[in-house]
Amino acid sequence: MEARPNIDCMVSQSGSVRSHAPVDPAELAQSLLPFGESRMLPRAAYIDPAVFAWEQKHFFDGGWTCVGLAADLADAGDQRAVPVGAGSVLLSRDARGVLHAFANTCRHRGHELLPCGGSAQRPSIVCPYHSWTYELNGDLKTAKGFKGTAGFDAARWGLLELPLTDWHGLIFVDGSGTAAPLTDALAGLEELVAPYEPERLVVAGSHSYDAASNWKILTENYHECYHCPMIHPELCRVSPPNSGENYHSTGPWVGGWMDLRGDMTTMSLDGTSLGVPLRGLDATGLRTVIYVNVFPNVLISLHPDYVMTHVLTPLAADRTLIQCSWAFAPEAIGKRDFDPGYAVEFWDITNKQDWGACESVQRGLSSPHAVPGPLSPDEDAVYQFVTQVARGYNGEPVWSQRSAQAAVVG
Ligand code: FES
Ligand SMILES: [Fe+2]
Image (cartoon, rainbow, N blue to C red; front, side, top):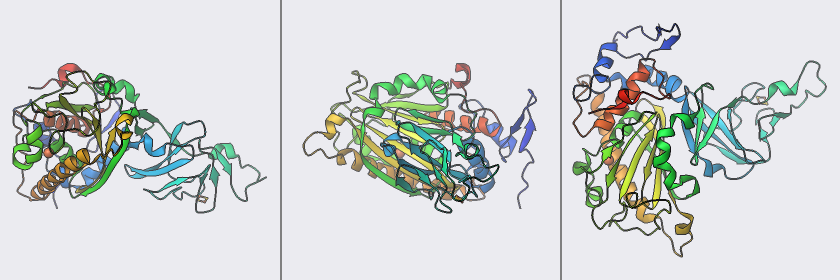
């Protein structure tokens, strides 16, 4: 059995206990070298269940994680249970229209309120085990048999609520309960995303994929088009793979933009759009596609006429659930015979090409002979993501703003 450094907890200079991921510190230091000299993350980051468990606790349960679309809980009484980190969260929309996130565990003896992945539409939250019933805002309404029981105070037994932020129609939940406001951390991204008004758009297509790949391999792949000439002939016909630049982010996000070719108006098989341009975009927005990843698990692809979103849910070190949705302007949806297929089909083909490559990377990295490789000059966004993860592995906060100096690469 490989020796694993005993570095889970160290005391920082400030005296607080920092948790370090169970990876080799010397290898991790290589990932944090300046761009051009650095190496990819240690192999254990992609294959070791112990690293995966650490990530679940410190990345996915340790701050803001995307759990889906607000549009999936459009009406009062809508409830969904979604996986987050080691457990699951129950989302509900109350009668006042407010979204809530609760630990998906009954206050009686812990039964899940909904099975993970399940949904319901009803005016209260009912535990299926002994029927404790909660209001949609989490207050305990009735506990069968407890009426008049001495010392039982229903007000003490409401559901455990977690901070929730609806950011442009994406729901984020803070499993730690202590993270700084997400909107502050994403302030630098706001001006890029706001013109697309994702919260106004209507989802007209969705696909779920189950990829035999680590979640970080999928994200790293998203951050570069170095691979595009080899595996994406359809994409290269509409967008030059060497076009665009990456942003110098100072928050928990990484991204960049790419051009559309001369007479192409969007990402589709023939470069034409069957939708309508998004109303808030300027001339540049109509000629480019923006790709951003909000740490740790959502990819937002902003097109001139639609927004595609991938929400990644890690299931194991080598397996990830990917929920992909395509949202269009209401004016497009309202067009007679509107068909979102032009966008959905294009990206479904491209997605599958990507997942195939990522699954091969996963298999390749499972070789005991695999060692972390260098990054090409075109992979600066991969570098930004890798260093974000590596700093997190070192116990540094991931969701707070970094200095611009630390974020600059190249
Ligand atoms: S565990 Fe929920 S009512 Fe008993
Ligand atoms: Fe790709």
